[in-house]
Length: 154
Image (cartoon, rainbow, N blue to C red):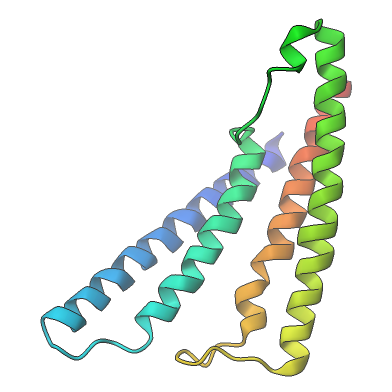
C-alpha cells in the first residue's frame, strides 16, 4: 500500500500542476486576445493537449481511488459472496479493456505518431509526446485494478 500511496501522491500533484498551467494558459489566451488584440498562437493548442492529459491521467487517478461511476443495481440484489464475484469479474474486464485500448492501442498510436514524425502545428511538439499519456495511464489503471484484486483475495 505504500507504493500505491506514493503513486497516488505523484499523480495528484501532477494533475494539480497540469491544471494550474492550463488555467494560466487560458488566462494568457484571454488577455492576449481581448487586451492586446493580438491572440497568442500556441495557447489554444496547449490547452487542448493539457486537457487530454488531465482527462486521461485523471481517469487513472480516479480508478485508483475507486471513485469512478459504477452501476450497482444488479450486484446489490445478491449476497456478499456473489457481490464480490461480480466485482472480480468487472475488475478483470476493466483490466482487459484497458490493456487492449490504452496500452496496446495507445502504444501503437504513440509509435505511429513517432515514426511518421507528426508534430503539432503551433508548438512543433512531437505528437508522440502528447499521446504517451494514454499507455502510461493504462499501466497505472492496470496496476490499481490488479492491486484491488490482490487485496480482495487476501
